[in-house]
Image 1 (spheres, rainbow, N blue to C red):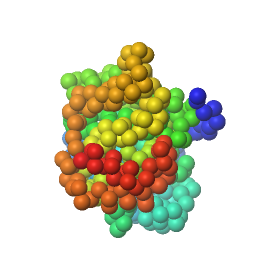
Image 2: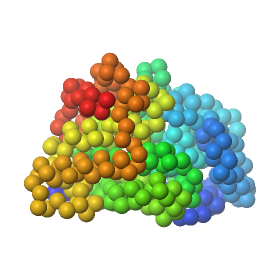
Image 3: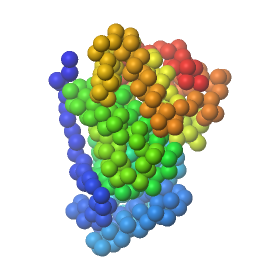
Image 4: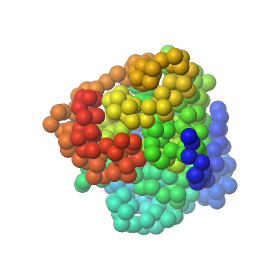
Length: 390
């Protein structure tokens, strides 16, 4: 039975469709931004494809000055956000725009808080400072994975403690999200697949989680349906705008779901993995963990887990409960195969001797996600999930 007891809060204006990136100047002007800090990734891909120039030209045409902070890397650190906040203040920017994947947008959101409130990112991650206000944020995702463009989280790594955790605050919902599927067409195959799995696991864990409500189910189910229908076609149709549009929409839905229901133990463990191994892309780490997570979770939430197969229109009504659970796990495995992501943690550099440290890191830093997971998982459960994924 759905939990009809919830708060629904979606303060982000979403502008969705092909070509809408050219509206960013108009949208920024409506927010009163006169000088923007454009936060994006290191390397030349977004410049090479013209996306940085598209954004800067649109801003310029609306009379908005722009300073570029192109320093973001995978699994960004608290220190990087501090540097960006210093740049933002030094140029007296009154708005922050994140262009790129989840890392770029999360750094932009973090900068928007620190530049206005002061302090350092580490203080917000540890809860020593409360994020209560931020500069106006515009998010422009170029991947279909994190959903950070519509949620209240900004994930950073504290390299001193190897804690990969989130600043969580309603203050860092982007004011506007520009979702243009044209910007995702140039994602290479591996990153296309990895970001899709990120969105999928957001939907799965929020749907399965103890914090799920009717609203969480609504958005999570929509994301699951969309991804199971369109993701299998992705790698053979990388430039197909229809497929990219549906996956970007699914990522947005999953982002709303986790903002209202959170993720769980799979994300807690992956954050530990990518804190210890910062070269590991979040979605790749999740792909390595997904099947062992499914085998742990399936017997603890049987009916809801089976419903994942129903959302994909898999015929299970004549099966026993155990057969239906196995059919659903097989569905997840087939998705990974079609995305060429049947990988193990050992392929990512994780070793047997690290498993307890990884589990303890997850339990210590992300207890809130462990607590959202059915079955009250113990440290030994976490180690076993990791071991089965190794």
